[in-house]
Image (cartoon, rainbow, N blue to C red; front, side, top):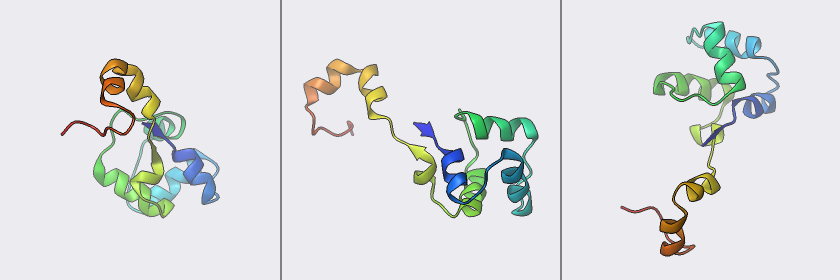
Length: 93
């Protein structure tokens, strides 16, 4: 998965992490400057669902707008298994 916070924020005319942090605080989510920097410049390894809910509210989006699937990365982790299953095979249940 790729985290796409900056692009989603830019679509709402939010251009800096400081501005995003201020808007989150106004919505009730206090984030440290360090954590905001990580959310803004990288891909978080973990995010609380409550925090994600506030981020989505501020950006008027859904989690799917922030998380971009990268199927090629999944395929590179298990190429033989996915190739054997065929191109139309879904994830195992």
